Length: 307
Image (cartoon, rainbow, N blue to C red):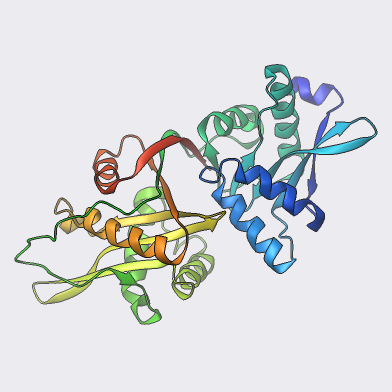
């Protein structure tokens, strides 16, 4: 990256304009599972005509003009779409220039997330300026299912009276919030109600209102509580990315994740998108087993750098 700062950059970042949206959407469509997050924001911008400030165009010098070489989504998380030019030297120049532009033009995000090879490469270049990372997760399985989930037999749990998995309603919010917070702390490592509570609650409310939050209640020892939940955290380009998959810690190991996921996949494919994706840490054997059991297959590798 130091070398890129000493030469004239051939690539630059510029705020995306409405005229750029269709072309950027085509870039994401080349790998819709990997690029569902920027595709979601592009779909919204195309529909509304309002381009969010987090969309950045990667431009390459081409003679007297410029051409599109990629895009950056810079929200709470940073996601990069930089298609290979088919030339290792050209790709090296692109990534060096983009990394320098990230440091020069953008603030450090809460996390960098995306295809592992590209995300880790960019992280290595910006680390002297944006580091240290709070946590690095270099190997996360990117998984997808684009057909009906495998049938999961009903659970035989005499001490637990299960309700059906369904869309969460506003009246479920007070019970759903603690489950979401418990999941977030376990996955991200801090309490969102102490750091950015308003934004966190606003997002959860928006997912519930949009019909993108799924919940299952159960009654054990006379107490009704959330036993399983999941959200469609990103939706764009015909792909719905599941996030926040959670089972009550006292009820794990009973197959609730498998039966719950099967129901969620059915609902998501019927109402949101034909393809359902997610990504999961490669060391989470229990989650991987549940995802494989309902029919997810691994299609790539993600990485997450958390600050």
